[in-house]
Image (cartoon, rainbow, N blue to C red; front, side, top):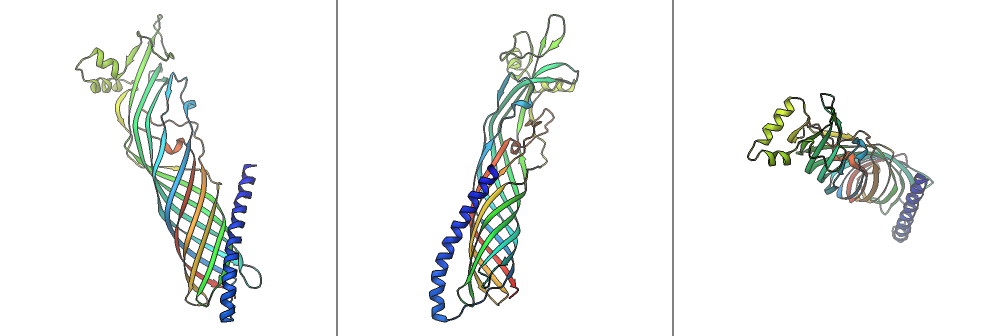
Amino acid sequence: MYFTSTIYALMKKTSLFLALIIVATNAYSQDLRKDVHIDYPIPRFSIEAIGLTGNLSSNITTRENNGNYEQPAVYHPGTVKSGDWKMKGGGALEFAYFLGIKHHFGVGLGLMCYNTACTLTLDSFRVEYKEKDSHNYDFRQLVTIKNVKEAVSLTHISIPVTIKYKVNFSKRITISADAGIVVNLVESGKYNTDATGDFEAIYKFNSNGTVSYDSAPTPDNHDWQITRAVYSVTHSGGQVDKYFDSLRVHGYDVGLGVEAKKQPGRRNYGAGSIGFIIRPAIAYNFSKNLAVTMGGYYMSQTVKNKQNDNYRIMDVDGNYNTLLQQVATFKTSSFGVNLGVRYSFGW
């Protein structure tokens, strides 16, 4: 139902845009041809290579992942935000087929690839949940991550399917307009981050000598609390980092200032989302076959991200998972200029 309504809305926009272009160009071109008495022919086929660049804006929606932590006693996921969106450029290769006697109307099919960049931030993250250590004991794992910032580069590969209208104003000048849908094939993101995290632990000792998970929002005062706050109170002037390091050597999942591993990561998204594109242009014809084109474009697209049921932002070993996995949808809009070279044939 959603897919059908989306296609219907896009087709309404396409029809309206083309209708406006047709009315404007026909009125002008008819007056022009009255003066020159020439109706210059339009080839039936064309292949065009297009480069594009422009401005980009985007809104994101996020999802919470508290279900990925067993029996969380405390969960404060923070807020993921995006900013500094940039259109880094891209290009397309399109094939067009024009219909009818005068070949004014046609359909186009192509392959488009463009790159964008943004910054993702997470102000704070805190979770306390049930975990099992290397000694097979249940305990309370405390994870605190602050001021996460990712530099993200996104690659978009899609198929534009367009309706085309073209008219020759003279032997050298051609006006055209494209409008249609963009079918997303691949959406992938590369990222880098300098995130760090604190990993603390709480062990609850029962009267019978067993160890269990303390699920209370406020842990019992008799629990063994391996935290920076407790150590600072009980060991004034002590070396808290060395204390945590020594416990880590003995198999406890704790550490302070654990750095995310530095290698760049990549995240692939699901395919199948539908967008919309309009692209008016003017062409200068060097010959009946070869022309250069210049124009503008507007493109809007919503990309949905597959949910990762096993997502955790970071572990005590520094294995880091990008904030991209917390993004449910990217809704982007872009407008700018495009330049191209077109080869026409099939008179």
